[in-house]
Length: 630
Image (cartoon, rainbow, N blue to C red; front, side, top):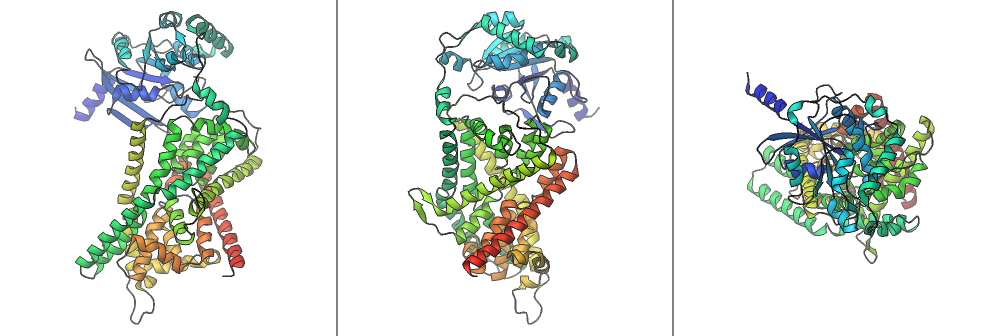
C-alpha cells in the first residue's frame, strides 16, 4: 500500500466535525482559532463553492478534522451554499464523508434568528454541541443568558465561546473531549425536518428564548444608534456617496509618493542594466521587454492596495451590509435585490469572486443577472489603465479643499461602470421576465473597529496575488509581447521603428482597421490582445511597445509622457470609455461558464460587452473630436 493510500485511510479514521451556523455568527473565526495554519482549501466536487477543512488536537491528544460549512439560515435550502451545507450534514453528498458530530455556532446577541437552524439540525439526530459565540458582546449589552437552562431546553451541551480572543475556544475543546465519536450515528432523513412546519419551529424558538434569555437590562447597542443616521433614507445615501468619493480621491493623493519610489527604482534598474550590457537581443528583452512591461504595471501596486484597504475596512467594521440595504430600493428598480450588492462590490476587486459570490442570491433569475453584470463593476485590473491615462491627460489640479481633478475623473469612471451595470440589469429584467422586486432579508452585524491583524493579512494577500501575477502571468505575456514585437527585424532602408515590421506590428495594423473608427492606433491594438488574459497587462504591453518604438532606456516613468505626446485627447477618452465596458478576461468567462453551466452565457457576456465598449468608444471619440476640433 502506498504512502498516499495510507494517509487517505488515516484521514478517514479521524473523526470529522461539521462547523456550521448563520452568516456573521463568527463561525469562520472559530474555525481559524481551532485549526490555525492547518487548513486545506479546495472546491466541492462539481461546483465552485469553497470547501475549507482543517485539523486540530484535543487536550487529551485525540486528533480531529473540522469542516467549515457555508453559512446557512435554514436546511430548507434556498441558495447553492445552503444546499451544500444541507447535503453534507444529511450525508447526501456523494464522495463527502458524513460528519461524526456537529458544532452549531450561534450569535449570542441574536438567538431569535440563529436558533431555527439549531432546531432543524437537531432533528437529524447527530451528536451536537452548541457554541454560544460572542457572549462577551451579549454581556456588555446586558443580555442575560442562562446557558444551563438553554442546554436543558435544547437537549445538548451549550458552550460559551469568544472566537476572536485567544483561549476563547477552550470550553468547546473540553466539550468535544466528551463527544461519542465512535458511535458512527447515521443522520435521520431530511423528511424529519420537513415534517415540522416552519411556524411551529419559530414558536419553539420564541418559547426557548423566553425561558432562557433575559432582556430586561439590555441597553441596546451603539450599532442601532449609528444606524439611525447611516440608514436614514436621505442622509444614508449621502454618506455612502461621500465615502466612495473620498476613497477614489485617496487612491490618487495617497499613492503619489510610493508610486514615485517604484518608478524611480525601476528607472534606476533599467538605466543600470542598459549601461552594463552590450546592445543586443538580451539587453532589449530585459530593458524594453521585462522592465518596460512589468515595471509599467508594478508601479500601480500602491493604488490597488489603497483601494483594498478601504474595502477591507468597510467590510470588517460592518458597513457593507448597510450599503446593501441603502441600495436595495435603487437596485429593486432594475429588477435586483440589495443582496446583489455584496457580489457586485466583490467585483471591484475582481469579477471572478464577484461572479462566485452570486451563489448567495436565492432567486435564480436575480443570480443570473448579477453574474452577467458583475464584470461591469470596475475591477482592480482596470485601475492601472485608468491611472496611466488620467495621469497623462488630466491635470493634477485641486478643484476644492481635498478634491483633486484626477480623483474626480476616477470616481466618474467607477460611477459609469455602476450606472451601466444598472442599465444592463434593467434590460435583462425586461427580457428575462422579472417577477417583481423581492424584499431584502439580510442580517446586520454589529459595528466594531476593524481588526488590524485581519487588515494586514488582507492587504498582504492582495499584494501577494498582484505581485505573483506580475511575476508569472504578466511577465510571461511581456516576454511574448517582446518577442512578437522584435521579430522579424526591420528590412533594409526601413523608415519606421523595427516594431512596425514585427509580427506584433503586423497584427496591430490588421486590428487597426477595426479599431481606427474609435481612435485606436496600431500600438493600442497590440496592447488589447494580451489584455484578454489580464486587463492590467495592457499597460505592460504599452510599456514594451513604446520602449521598443523609442529604443530608449527609460521605462516605467517614461510611458506617461510618451502617450501624452503620442495620443490625442479624444483617443485617450475613447480608451477610458472602452475600459469601462471592455470585454472580460478569459478566466472570468471560464468561471461564468462554470457557474451558469452553459457556454451560452459566457459568449453572451463577451458579445454584449464588446458591443457596449465599441459603441461607447465610438461616441466618445467622435463627440470629443467635434467639441475639441481635433
